[in-house]
Length: 107
Image 1 (cartoon, rainbow, N blue to C red):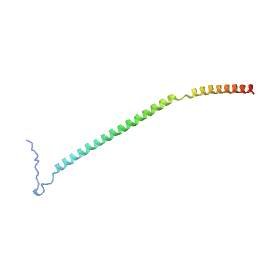
Image 2 (image 1 turned 90 degrees about the horizontal axis):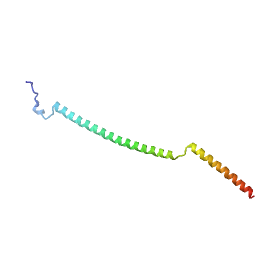
Image 3 (image 1 turned 180 degrees about the horizontal axis):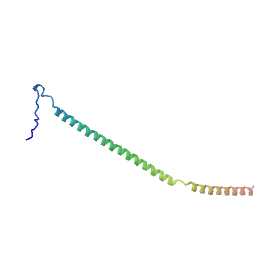
Image 4 (image 1 turned 180 degrees about the vertical axis):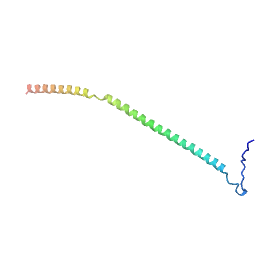
C-alpha cells in the first residue's frame, strides 16, 4: 500500500504557529487566481465599454453619411446648372433687347 503523506505539522512547539510552505503556496496560488479573475473581469468591462463607444461612433458616422447623401441628392449637378444658367442668360438677353426696343419707341 502506498505511503500517505501526513498533513500534520512536524515542528518545534515554539514555532508551530507558523504556516507551512504548502500552506503559503496554496494561499499565494489562491490570491493569484483571485487577482487573475479580477484582471480578466476588468478587461471584459473595458472591452464592453470600448465596443459601446465604437458602436456609438459608427452609428453617428452612419447618420452623418446618410445626411450627406440626402444633401448631395438635393444639389444641382454642374451640367444641370449650366443648362439653367444658359436659359436664364438667353431670357435676360431677350428681356434687355425688348426693353431697348420699348425705350427706343417711346423716346
